[in-house]
Image (cartoon, rainbow, N blue to C red; front, side):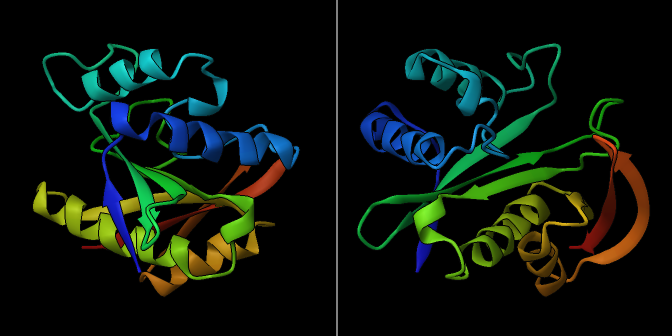
Length: 170
């Protein structure tokens, strides 16, 4: 169905097409993209994402993070997901991962499969659970989290809207 692969120079054009689809759909935020949505230069973004995978080179303002594109059987990037290995003060409500599926590929089960595959990566890296946060109004993401074993923990306010924190045991 899909596979998770790390960003690379070879994926530049596909990554830019992925980003463009969000922008063309009037969506300015690509969750789980380590700021691909805010970066003009793919090569700079790739360098930053690569640096953040290594404890010796991670940006001091970030935490150790692995980012993956979700690629379908036709080698199209259909989604992006990241794994934050620890939570700092900024991330304490946001959680260990974020993810997005491009608008044309939604409601096909990709987000559920992406999170399922990321759980394996997290467990193999020694993590015991994943914390995820979601705006309560984002029903597709709530369903994705629940399908992956998410258990409600608490509510907080995000941009004046209720958001919920879930934990997934690994």
